Image 1: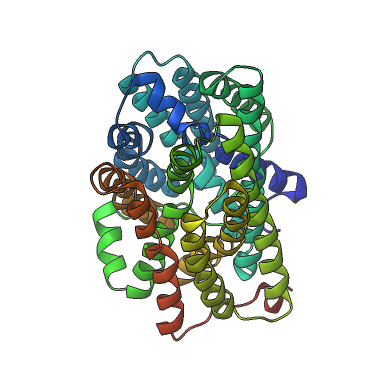
Image 2 (image 1 turned 60 degrees about the vertical axis):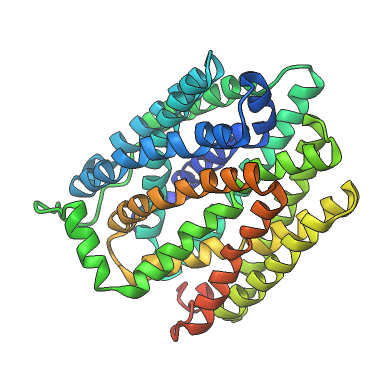
Length: 397
């Protein structure tokens, strides 16, 4: 690898995303957070998703642009971001009110945006000819972290503990990994310092001249609907529809994560055998639409668990292929792609709050049906875009 100094450093970067996904305890434990503060669904989604995300995303693009100006300081940005995330998670466990929780999660989201995204940039800039492969591995590491979240909450529920203790545990793990990274020597950048880094306004203006970049970043933004936001709504649905306890919800959601691991593993193997990215996007997106409807219509927990596993497996390949296409459309400047992605994330973070309003006014089932727009939009984009997603095996030499 040109930038990532050996396999050990790459593994440490992958651990970052695993811990980042493990930090999703607020989503699986969303009904319990709601019960703790006696808030509505809309208010809970505002506290857990929208408010902290907007707080982070108002600051994050500017910091990522600053990091792009000084790639030689990437270690400081990554370590500082992860330290901020750890502090936010620990504070969340002590939150006496929903608004303190929102502030704590805002700090955690901001730290995640810096530490996790810049770790991803290091991997993407390291292997520009095999981005789909590394994005698949990145997602696989994230899915491992996702699996840990329901397992942790199920174990804590069995021990009669809850979401606060989960935040403390994850905050401690993040702090430990931050110390480990701070003791490592980060790879030196192989690009010269850019004295005139574009402003966010200039970045957005330039992106408007590249409609493919905007389209694929928009598709990547929509992928958030079937990620952490969906976990929160799915947990609510399982509680309301089947009266599932915290431990039961953790087990059911675990099967969704296991399905995702199977799906991303199969996707990477298919890419290496020459199956086109467009074929995977269209087939996986179509199956995801059908699986989501089947999951909502499931009459019992067993059927719901099976449908959720299929949904997880079909959704998992979408984001890495979509995000890799965005990096391809702005080749050689991964930090700029991440800054623009963060700016568009302001739109993404408002979607869970809107879905929460729909859930409160029309019904949770209707809000869940609206999420089908994510895989459907990706299917349409994959069909109409004349360029295909290159298989990693074709450029991995």
